[in-house]
Length: 634
Ligand code: ADP
Ligand code: MG
Image (cartoon, rainbow, N blue to C red; front, top):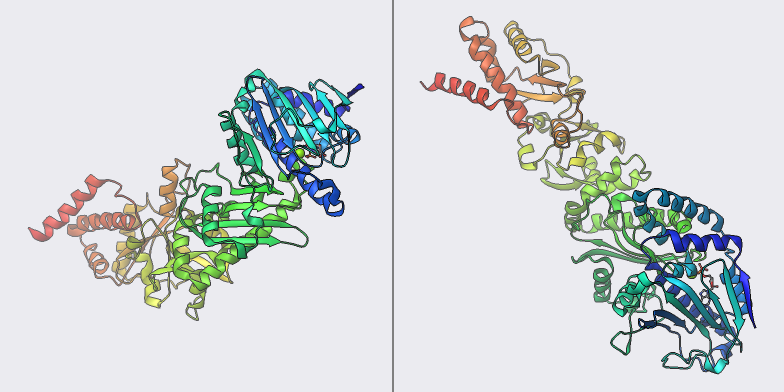
């Protein structure tokens, strides 16, 4: 006897949307059906603990996929728990799942949008990947679905059929002995489910075994049931590894196993630097197998690459683009998180925004920073290599206004020490500060070797203070944004704040005339000219007043960014320098004033060049330089 029933209103709506409004990433229907099949096996395995009879004559857990291209059908068979009539109606006729209403609303909204707006269609694929449309996703590729199921311990086969048009038929039919007889199976079925999709014309790619093989490997490589695919060329093969390395005890895993997994799972081909294999229990239950690479992946700085961590739920792949799993500044961490305690019944969309993931994320950050910290303290040389590759990414976290965990990051930062001539930690810097020193001094620039010659370092060298030389673009931002570490202020030796505190120098009469001359000829370019005791061997330097550092200005020019504070430099003059004293002398007389003006120009341009800028007018620069040389040589 066959009965025709209607889907509940919500389900009907969902079917419509799924079948008509989703355009690509249709392949996830394989994931959904295989994950259901694997759940069904897990459930029977569990039931059989108390009722061992359920597994009598059971041929073992497996999922079979039979593509039939000539017949235009694709069949999935599992040897799991199966469903009786009541189960089928409950499970497939209604969507009694939490969050479903919300999910439908969102899906409906975005599919309306997509229909109205051709260009918006490209957003749709993401959605299907994230939502758990589950069983019904088969309607993206199939005109109709037939499901036959035999529940473990039952004698009746249920047949269920729908064209996805709001109705389904259900009947009980056939002899238990004949269940699965139409297929070439290694063992007669004693229970389980057979799902046959009558494929849409344009979905015939899913009837190719090579395509199916690839999809199964992508989404279900680690479910613990073998997936056996019938090949186009005849015969069949197991396509998944059916082993989840992260679930195995560490004692059974060799370093080679880890390394193979790293390469096959992450598609990174360097040697991994650190691996973290853990099982978190308690409030949250999840497994993790994470790696820190030793070399920068080529796409590390592609902004669209958010995460290299694959999220699994109970061994079923969910997504490899889960923003809520790892902060941006740790985006080089690769591997797998298997959140075994997220309920697979909630939609993928809900998983993405689930508070559980936020907690997992926080735990991962802790774990990774602890691993980094212990590397830093145990093997600083190796940590230096790591930092050379990934330090710039860590430092991005210090600049992110949304990043709440900046205090986790600072102890992980290394910077090049002027005194020690190598990368050191901020803690090392602070521990070695002079007793009277309040500031963490730093200098930014492109090239560490050149920076070491900078006049900005003279005062610190004189006082025996260390200076951190920073040469990543991101270094232009974080020290000012962070402000302090362990109650010490970050202070650029190039900033006017550093020298403003010193007592004012009373110029001699000659020196005042020279100072005025400097001011007069450079007033277009400078905020101010002043005498300073900061300099030891250089005659002049340019310090930064309110504006950006020269390096930052250059960066902004490269990116064509608007700049409003370009000329906020202060020229500091060293009154004790022989050249400056000679110029002060020469500025007394009209005869030599031209020489003084040339020298002022050259000194100013030199100061700019030392900070990494090119001469503003090379012709003028060489003309003046040549004139001075002629004077001394001819
Ligand atoms: P979910 O898997 O998230 O519950 P689905 O739409 O994928 O949602 O499946 C709905 C329900 O149908 C499942 O929860 C399960 O009870 C039942 N089901 C689907 N496929 C099978 C199967 N192969 N064997 C047994 N039960 C199944
Ligand atoms: Mg499912």
